[in-house]
Image 1: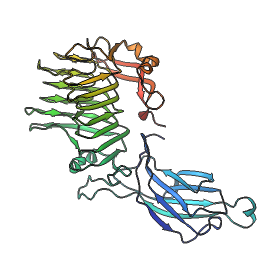
Image 2: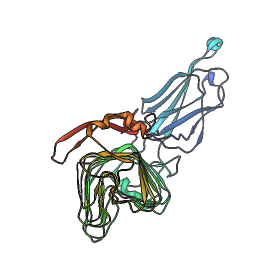
Image 3: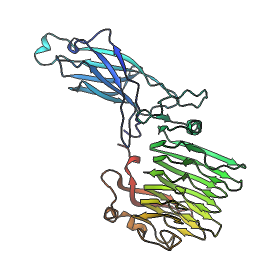
Length: 415
C-alpha cells in the first residue's frame, strides 16, 4: 500500500455488550500505532484479556459496511488495521469488527461470534479556523495530519511550538506573489518535524519582489524536513530562491526536487537555497537556476550557500542549467561546511563546490554513469533501506524530456 500515514489514537477501553463465546469475558482496546519512515494511520486493536479458548480471530475495519482492511484467521490477540488514503480534512467514523472462531476440541461447544465497536479518527488542534488540523495531536506518536494547501499554510499558526506533522496527500501549491518583505511560506517551529511520507508539493510559484527577500516554501529553522518531494515549482527572490531555507541545526533528509526553477541575486537551488545544518540522502533533477551578483554565493544543484559547519552527504544533482558567476554541481559556496559522497551531472558545472574549485567528494558523472549502482555503494550509499535503482525524468535546458537510470528514494516507491 502506498502513502500510508502513521498516527496515534488516544487509548480507550471499549466495553462490549456481547462477547463471542470463544472470546470469554473481555474488551476491545484501541491504542497508538507508531511507524518508521513510511508510517501508517489506523487502529491497533487488542482483545483484553486474550482468550484462553481460541487462537483463531478475524479483524476487520469497516467504513460503513465496506471492509477496508482486514487480517483473517490469525492467532494473534491483537493487530493493526490501517486506513488507506485518509482524508486529513474530513475525519471519518469507522467500525472495528472482531470475529472469534471455535478451535480444536471446542468446535462442538462454542460457536462463531463477532463483536463491533465504532471508532472515530477525529482529533486535531483547537484553532478556530476552517483549515485547522482535524486529525492528530502534534506529538511524535500522533502527528498532525496535513492533506490540503490550507492545512500546510496553517502550520504558521503553530510556528512557536514544537510539533510533528505528517503529509497525507500530494499538494498543489499554486502561485504566491509578494511585494512586502517575506522569506518563507511555511515556518516550522524549533524542534518540529515535517514528514512528507512519500508525497510531493507541486505546481506553483513563490515570488518576492521586496528588497532582501527570499522565496521559499519551508523555513526549516532548528527543525527537520524529510520524505518530501518538490516538483514543477518556480521561485524568484531578491536575496535567495529555492524550496527550503535552513539554519544551524536544520535537517533535510530523504527529499528531492524535480524541474525546480529558481532565480535570485545571491543564492539559488532546486532544494535548499541556504544551508545551515545537515542535508543527507537527497537529489535533484532538472531545473534552471540563476543568480546575478558576483558575491560569495551562487547557484548550486543542492544548495546555493553553506554556512556554520553545514554537512552535505550522499546527494546528487542533474541540473538542467546553472547561470551564475559562481555555479556549482552540488554547493555553490561553502562559507563553512563539508560535502561528502556526492555526484553531479558533468558539463553543467566545472566544480562540485565553490569557491575553492573543489571536486573532493563531489564527483562529476556522465548521464549514463548514474546507472552504476556499485559507484554509489562504494561511496557508502544504503541500497537496502534508503535507495533503490530506478528512473528519473526531467526537462533539459532546451525543453527536451530526459529519462535516465539513477538512484531514487525508496520512500517514494510505495510498498
